[in-house]
Amino acid sequence: MIEKTVDKKKICVLFCGGTISMARTPETGILEPAKTAEELLSLIPEVRKIVDLDIINLFNIPSSNMASLHWQQIARTVYDNYEKYDGFVITHGTDTMTNTGTALSFALGDKLNKPIVLTGSQAIPDVIGTDAKFNLVNAFRAAASDIAEVMICFGHYVLRANRSVKISESDYNAYKSPAFPPLSLIRPEIEWSHFARCKKNIDEKLELNNEFEKGIFSTSFSSGMTPNMIEALLNSHDLKGIVFESLGAGNVPESFLPIIKKAVSKGIPVVVTSPFLGGIVDMKGMDITGVTAVNAGAIPTGDMTDVASSIKLMWVLARINKMMAEGKANNADKIKLVKNMMQHNYIGEITHGTK
Image (cartoon, rainbow, N blue to C red; front, side):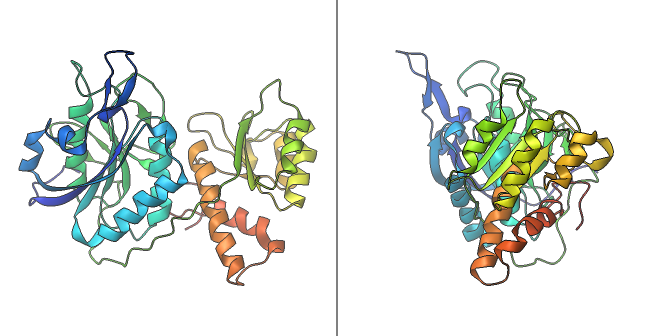
């Protein structure tokens, strides 16, 4: 569908830093935070023709320093200001934009009825040919739309955040949604796909579930890794979950099967993702080691991205901890609960799930 002419919307800018807010220091040539949100928006005065703006400066940091506490703060800020605005634009660094976008989609849930748009840039704003201005303008166009999703607007695409992966450190189309179609193409008019979730006619009260369990260990099966290395982690009180990037459609080296069994017996969930963009981890594509891993207690994650699998596990464990604290679940049911919740489709993060 083609974007329609809309009344001037009120948009809140949450300024969180990233390359889009940086400059090179003359002495070292290293990128350091330089611009404020006000300075950044002065580059695109034309955007005020389509939206009214308010600015909230949250932090100005490289996205490599983003952690779950930052996700919580961003989600809480959206929640606290939700009724005041028609949409939100979040400036963010590119390295962990998919992490933050995915976390926000879980934290704000399926009752979200406004656009939340993350954007940034590959090049700093002050260089010739920068993508900063292009991305910012289009982020505001997306935020003024009738789409109700957490999105990444970057280059020539708008993508569902929890389906996105970063594919390039330099290309201006830095992100891809390998297992789900783009929500829109950026052209003179934004062409929204029928896959994009439109605003509902009736607002439901937004719910905030922005707790994320720490202690998730993610790794791939490299040739030099041994089961003993993982077994040593099982004795750590900090370890709360493991995400294995499989060797195919869920296949796992046979030598690691005892580790999976031991982790599960200790109440530590083990999930298995695909290393391939758009790959699906399910029983149909597995060889005998993959099937045995599932039988040992490993949880396949369908066509979720590796980022979504890790962050969803953090979110699921936090919810289960809350359920147990309230007496609504017990430790004996923990692994079964994790499996059911990981394979449930909450906000369009997985195709092969239930909703």
